[in-house]
Image 1: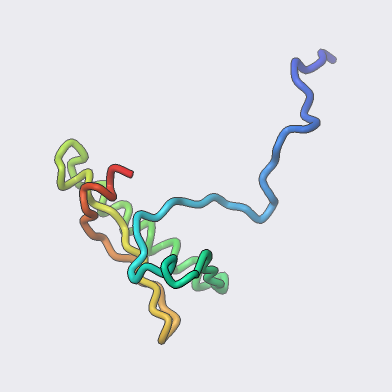
Image 2: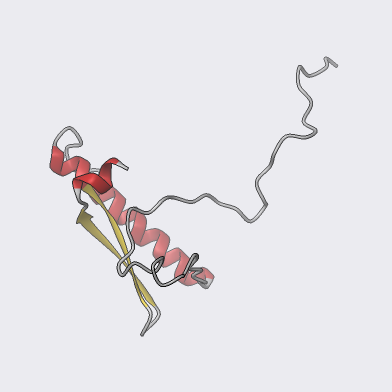
Length: 102
């Protein structure tokens, strides 16, 4: 058996429960001004599956835009979190050009 050129010891690993993430462009209203540094949203498996399907559907729709045009590049996703009834809506929406470049 040949030796590896590198040792797996000391290599950083993600936690078992980490499945990825993404950056958001903006939050309305600006909760950072109010001192909120993190917003955690807990979902049941069924609701997470619904959210996943909604995101996939939205992304497939956005993927139909011509990305070589300004309109196509500026399309994005808005996750609208309603605190009064505990819902999350996935909305296809144009983003401001400055936010889309970030």
